[in-house]
Image 1 (cartoon, rainbow, N blue to C red):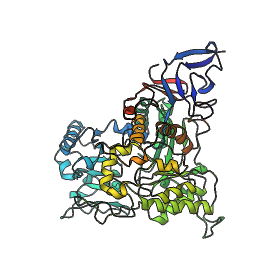
Image 2: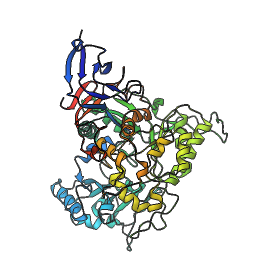
Image 3: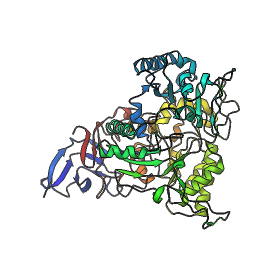
Image 4: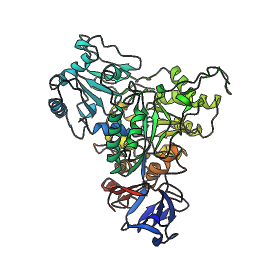
Length: 558
């Protein structure tokens, strides 16, 4: 019997400290069975010569909205890289509306007011180009969006009147009491609930389209943060079925760890029970039916942490901060952002999920939100100790030294996004002001604290390209060319480790992915140039030439 395939004449950066480099990798049944000359090529059915290419383990995006990446491919593209000003954005929406079937919703995603003169599109501006269609545009942060008059009317608000935001949200109005179009945080649901939910097949198609796009970038694994709660995040109550349908149809090309949103969890009927070490009365366990929790599934599709948002967006100025946002052009004065849930409700849900055995991933961008979340995780472990829970805090966009030390001492995993530096950094600096900007998008400080960090993009909020992400972690320049907290630069080796070993560790998957070593998954990416050797400012020019998943060529050429 012949073994499957030998990939040879490569420069493999294995990420395994015991054997950091190799020139050949042998694969059978999707696993690595040999390195270098341990097994001769004659034992393998196929042999591929990599021509000396540099190879790294498949990039693992620890925070990537895969289904939304796919969805964005079929919506109006209003990202700043495409629509450089308000006129171009409105023209793009106008073309999409003109081409849409009569009465259909027209949706777009990716606009950023920081590139539009610090102005959000208004309902009236969208009305002028909508051809009568209801229009919804999602902000690139996905924490807010704008709707036109027809959209508000479909949602039950004729003339955009009597629009009242729920707790944790905002719906600004003009002097006549009419909503201007912007809906922030939980207020998004006022309009989004009126948009027909995607079917299981629709979600499967999004997952398939997103997978195909990411494979071209060398991404072989992702964690999708938040499914199943469309009033918060997710497409429908059946999102997981959409993922399963994509897998059944052969469209799930990347390995997916999915996070149910925490509001999909419910009490498990044990409101009484052991109090734990800190007293104060028990907290009911929170879980899914049949007691399913983190880890259920297999190497292609599994349940990861439960996800919850504590606050909002930094560039949208809704992240919960200890200090007011910088005041400019009427924005920021007296504004410190907000919590999406009252602190007591966050506590009940997070501790309940922790007690039921879930890994929990809590979005916390602002420094005030970070303190709230740190307190809750500390209480959870104090009352119901769980070794190696690996609870996560997504983003950690603003953090002081003491907060980072506390993160490390509690064993929490921060999940940063290097690409934010380039695409969002200018807007973040305007929101924070120079003194507080130095506390934002920190990465080296996390590593210096001894934390094993993952790498992620939050795509489609910013580009999903891991090479660009590595470039920004190393160079730390914004899209305007400005240096952004340069003392937080890290090395290529640290960035690649984060994208492989760190991301696997953050998902409790480091026993089978993240390194190219014996028994590990045969997922890797071949590069056009050696990313470890090119000048720092040329990292962005490196390209993925081939992506291998499960030992098989998934994209590109060898």
